[in-house]
Length: 359
Image (cartoon, rainbow, N blue to C red; front, side, top):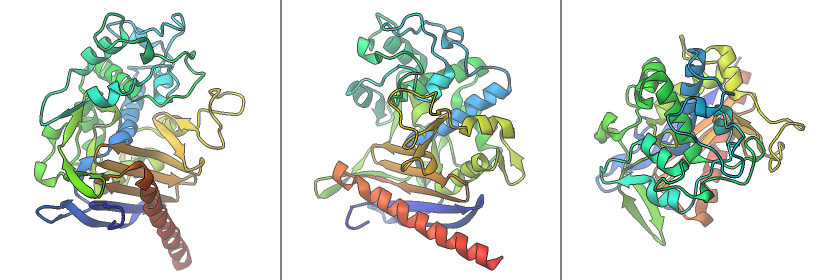
C-alpha cells in the first residue's frame, strides 16, 4: 500500500459460499484518520453491472422483458446502427457487450461524470441525445461497424441503455427496483444507487495518485448510472456475490430462481458461436458477468476515478474474493491491484485447504 500509494483497502474471502475471512487496511478518510472497514461504503464502478444484470433477470422472471426481443419494442425512441439499420439489437447483446453500440471517448469520460452534487442529465434524455440522429451527443462514432452479436466491445453506455429499459418495463427507477428485489431481501441496508441514499459518514473518500502525491477527488454520480453507480460495502457485497454463486440464494433468502441464475452466469460463447474478436480461452461472457484472468475466474471488476474493485470467484465457486481500493493508480502501477488480489486468492486457497483438512 505504501509503495503504491493506496489509501484504503477492504476485502473478504468467501469459501464454499460462506464468508471465511474479512479485513480492512488504511483509511476511508486520510485527513481525519477514519479507518477503512469492511462496512465502509463506496461506489463499486462496473461491478454495478451485475446488479443491473440481476434486475434484468428479475424483470425477465416477471415476464416484463425478453433477452432476445428487439430493444426498439421497449423504447420510446428508435435506436438503429446506421451501418446495419435493419439488424435488431437485443438485451442479450447489451448484456454481453456485443450490441455494436459504443462508448465514444473522450466524450464518455468527459461528459458522463457529475461532480460536486450537480444533478446528471436524466438517463432517458441522455440516451436519446446519444443514439438518435439530431441529438446533441449523436455521432456516427457511437456505433461500431459491426453487426449486433458479431463483435465484443465493452460498452458502458450499452449497460446504461439496458438499465433504462428495465426502468421503462418495470415502471420503477433502478435504485427502487434494486432496493425491493436485491438490497432489502439481502439485508444490504447501507447500499444504494444514489449518493442521497447513503449515509455520508459511512462513505469512503476517494483518492487518485498523481505523480508522487495522492490527491482527494470529489464524490460524483454518473449519467449512465446502471453501468457503475452502485454504492455498497465489502460486507454487504459479499451477501450479493454469495447469492449469485449459490444459485440465487443467500442464507434462507432467494432473490432469483436457480434456472434464472444459471442463464445469467452461463457462458454465452462457444467455439462455433462467438464474436469474431473473442478468444474463448481468454474471455467468455454471461449476462453482465464475465471471465477474467485468462478465463480462470468469474464475476466482475470495476474501475472509476478513485475506485478499483474486484468481485471474482474460481470457476468451481469454491474460493471467491472481494476487494475494494479507494485509490486510483497510474497505468504502470495498475498491476499492484492484481498482485494484492492474487495474495488474497492465495490466502483463500490456504483457508480452503485448512477447512478441508479440518473436516
